[in-house]
Image (cartoon, rainbow, N blue to C red; front, side, top):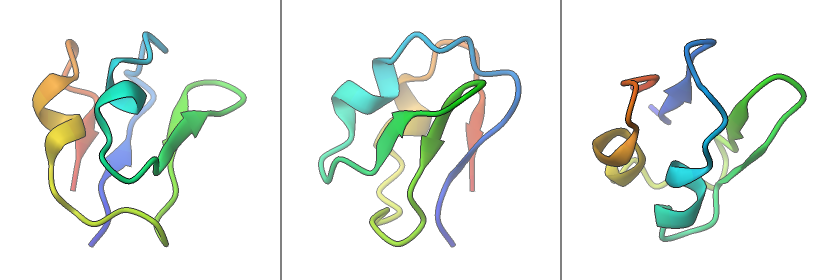
Length: 55
């Protein structure tokens, strides 16, 4: 299952810069993960400073 970013996201962009497949982009209210591109590596969750990313 692809990772998801919750509303706790502070839109810092750290996750997008670390995603090895470019699955993360800025959405209307916070960053979002493209489920079709996500390879479920967990890198994004490991770098999120507020713990807003989970699977």
